[in-house]
Length: 325
Image: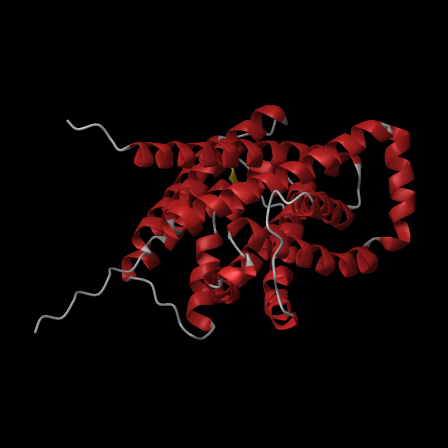
């Protein structure tokens, strides 16, 4: 058997490293985010602070010349605002869902994201119709999440607040994908704009922060100082700052690696690995935070995540056959 070319081997190694960094960063993000949200009960502020860490990282990379600065016009920036807004709601919803409920439950509900994406694809023009088999795969996703909510001897038991926030994150992520894909493709296609995958995420992160600020002001500003003082008195400043900064660092890093991986292999492969990632987070969070995993929770999670995996594989449309003369 002929040895693989060096370029192909290097590319494979790069992809493996991207996946490992993505998984590790995402797992640690969920740990630090949960710890920070348990210490500081100002969760929109926490979401905004995490985005600030990412902005500082981007500014450092641009300022030192390590990464080329985006070259965007005012119209380019305006076209990115909807993406940043939906990214803000997706991030904020995830932070709040993990804050008011178990991380494992948040991840189980977020496995329903394909159902939201399918609905958005059909409802909002231009319609994105998936193969029929892909829609069938939504049944085990929704059914698995439902089963995970059934507690033995207690019936259906749902943390409705966590469910609402996680569903908000799902809807926002679906809308971000619907409205953002064409915009980001056009920006990436123009080399003069310096909008590779990393810079697309960095710009989206900045706009997301700007969209989060009004939500902090509306929901938490009147009590923010009191919440901060109470958290510092109870937990100390250093642990709070550590969890806040590390959650922001891990959030930025894992998203940057995820964007880079998706740009290299495409959305379908990335979606499949994103599904596998949820299994790791559910297991790790159950151990770290001693979150109970009953039989129905485990079985329902497996069904929902399996359905998401199948949806990712079946949702890609077959390429049209070339016409013969």
